[in-house]
Image 1 (cartoon, protein in one colour):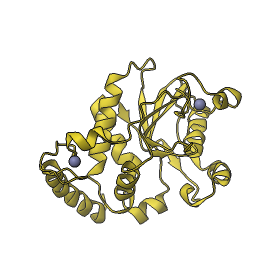
Image 2 (cartoon, helix red, strand yellow):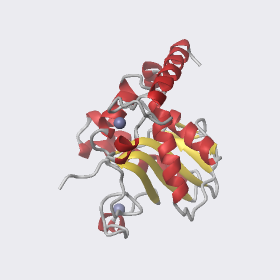
Image 3 (cartoon, protein in one colour):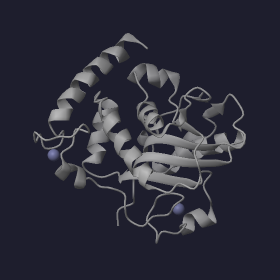
Image 4 (cartoon, rainbow, N blue to C red):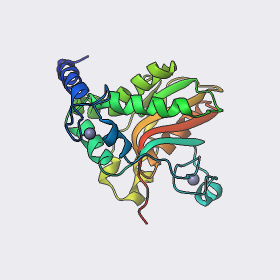
Length: 240
Ligand SMILES: [Zn+2]
Ligand SMILES: [Zn+2]
């Protein structure tokens, strides 16, 4: 672990202790160990509406027309929130402003949601969305990995962040128009070993078009995975 990350983790532990006493959204003095008071936790944009089980977009609860006509390479999507206020802002703070302790809040809430689901496909392996080594050096941590680690520990599933790597450095997806994202992400991942017959969950912070998750799911299936799910903190939904 590099010194910068170690320092960040020390700060994060301090902030977490603080967060345990005060709600990070309203500063009320009754925050739980998640750093949120009950009222603020309840008012978060939970993704509870009927949705397509495959891509997580609005539907009547059945696989949507888009997934039926051009099926993605992943088989299911579980998202905790919709990418709306204040979760959008919390995720931005987590990712770019060193609020590392939020990984615990997001991962714990995700684990709680997962525990209520009757997941027919038992997951063998959790793989966090890989970050290119140059990007990792720049940011100091992989936001997906920090969340995946905690979810894996809570659910007692192995977390594997070495088998699959991001070998090509491309512009960040968020900086590109939606249409260019598929082209930008093509062929960027590589898998070092066979994953024959495994059920895998990919953990990521945000799913927007799903282009990165789809490309990684494709890579995992090519390596032999039989089932791939997306476990994301927030799903961007088109606003009506
Ligand atoms: Zn609050
Ligand atoms: Zn769908």
